Length: 193
Image (cartoon, rainbow, N blue to C red; front, top):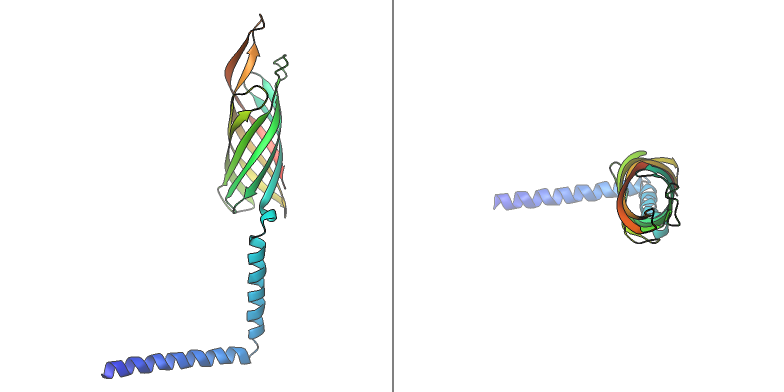
């Protein structure tokens, strides 16, 4: 019975001490600081749920070497879920100057994903694009690894080493088309805004 009374007295004393401390906080003007903190938290929650803030666009240029030298330009539109994960879709134009045929342009359409490895200003990342080519069909797969650097509040520059796995149509000397699998390795640079 003594233990129950002792526990009850300890709980009552701690509750009254906490209540007294709470009253002291309000009388010393700390209440306005609590209101400010709460207001800041509300603003932060509103900003985190702003969908348009997380929509990102990228424009990138690349130079690649495989069975021939190709240049490329891509546009990617996507959503950044958090500081580490990005998912979007893109399209572009790949030009093969040494092909010498009417099929020297490829237009890939793909899904692009990026996984950032850190949350710092200079972020290493790995990326994967998977899709098809609009010009003559076939597949388009492009893994890459790179770095992303914040330039301003809503502007990033990135540089990556990439490999494009694709198939393309080539013509033999007698004009018969054949589809061959190609691997192109190169560099890409771009801006995300």
